[in-house]
Image (cartoon, rainbow, N blue to C red; front, side, top):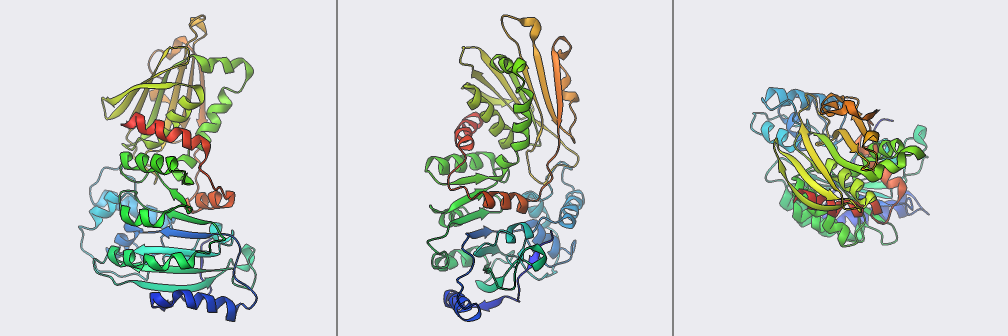
Length: 429
């Protein structure tokens, strides 16, 4: 499904007139309708790399804020052109910062907030509100409004099912414009806040947007790892419904690991794990820590110590319920063409050694299609039963992931994530 534009060119209005215009839109243009009775979605959508690539004429506009293939390809080329390590994630903020040093004055049409991904529009949201910060240091607040609906071939009808509101401007202008948001969010509908950017930027705006009972969607792969995990566990502890896209991308790894130990003759092996190794792309450890925390929580391990290891990895010790120590090691692995999501898992190894039956030691290795298992196979595995599986890469756009979350309608944090978040933060600290 391809992204879709709004039904009409957005109308630019003074901020004070947005609410009254939307009320008239439904009472006059759509008599008898108040719009879809679903949910509202607020999106922080900086698209810094895309803005810089357009400004430096490395891709043509418009700016739409969608992670389309041509944008990712141009960003990978930019990593090479600005002489950054090839293992740099293409949409990382460091890429945008490097591009900011290059000359360029191209201006592309800005369609952020108007370019609705089909996976999201198929859910017929009542209202989409996009905050679109600009590269311009001084850019007065612009507010745009339009009706939108899924295309007929995507299941939409002839009547508008929702509307979009775009707030565009510099940081200060957006901060001043937040006052118009609350009246635009019907109290009877759930509201989601999708922070589609680094968790390091604009923390004041994030705090003002993501106030309970609004449900928060973040990506702990984006931002300083300490900041990411601190924010995640703080919000979870406060009782707010939090969804983490980085956690969502772990689902395939968790499912495969569970399937390995599902056969009855292998289940007892889980009680004899003595070593856990996780390899991740680059130097962002959060996804690996979340997986380790999930395993530890499920098996009742208690963290004993944690420290930085040689090679910028993390070494930690857990204690099993029977008092035996489990060694944990997370290691960064440089990748020539990394995922657009920093710190994705490359491979996992669990070594299980029953004390009463040392000859029955088992080594379980899961690895990504792109990574291979050779590094994890080293170190005396020949004396153990080796179970090795490849975990297929799940290639899905971030918009598809968001649509999966919205379709679920969760009004609480997933219990597994709520349990893993504080433990992952403890391992990092």
